[in-house]
Length: 202
Image (cartoon, rainbow, N blue to C red; front, side, top):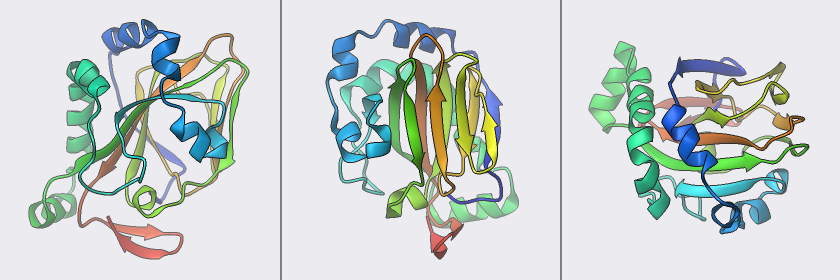
């Protein structure tokens, strides 16, 4: 979603349990589904575990995969925080009252191996334009750098960030271990988005 900044921090979490669970995942889990890497050249070097996701990138009625149930108890505090974050203003609350509560249309774990990169790109597609794209670093290192717009920075483990996915963004992991982020796409129906292509409704 396009907004006024390159990125904004939404909060900070104790992710010890989540990090431990993710660190225990074997290569079979990470290699089971390569569809995202095949569909998007920018993500060719990554590995993904789908929690909530659909290959058609639909904007409603998301599919919850078996892995979501495994991680759900650890994710619920983060998801609850996100829901409340986008209900802080009177305008946001009025939109939710009129159009219904927000929902998570996608949630994935994505791993970027040491020495690999996510090439510069802008997220396209009707759903990606209309959702808040939120990152939670689960396993990271100081040499993993995120670039979005004019901002170049390291996202520490446990910090929650929304990125402006309608600005050019990229990642490089120059550390010695794989970097894992939880990516959540959150939709508030009825929200007005001032996209690069003109105003649209979430």
